[in-house]
Length: 302
Image (cartoon, rainbow, N blue to C red; front, side, top):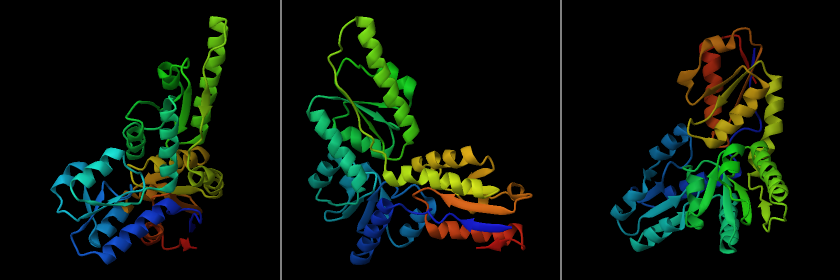
């Protein structure tokens, strides 16, 4: 059997940037003075690695208790404006590692909010990225997870703009967009008049996330078995896993090598390993070597 790692897998550039900023802070500052607000990424192995270097994870309630002059890293997901205000009030230095794609989303939401638009966000209401986006429009927005919810909750008599959390799947976003457009047409017919409204759909899904789907599908078809490695809390991981599983039903989601099951590999000649944009390359290498070590001395590692 052959075991290969997806050459397109590994950290996206936004995560690479955040981790590099964290490592630089840890090198340049005394131990115990560098903090990150929430888990830096949704990957427990990378969190453990950075914790061993001295990065301390805190919550919002911890900010007032930090010594003045402490440095707090804002992770790639971003934060709402009130987090920055709280830090300033307590003399805490914020190191902003928000992914530029997320920053751009926040800026666009704020622009349309200031123009009086009804803001609709396709995403997960309590995901850290969406919490930050909600903050820039004073939480005056509608967060939806699918077509039915959008049709039930969005008032299309108001001028409206649809955005997306950057790690959601594009096909569902497009279905929501099309359903809302169709509903506007229905309203015109039902009320026998032109609905005086505007509707805009802004595809704010990260290009690196969406662009991986075709490559993942090909990789899934090329292998008998796929081991998908990601943190269980990774929104991006859940989306990409479904993409892979739709192409190859012998796809298995793991967070840790402890979850590997020898029965998965029965009769398999090719085993592929891939993961989320928050899955480090070094951990996929570990998964590959664990499969080799534990399950078959005849597996060829490429």
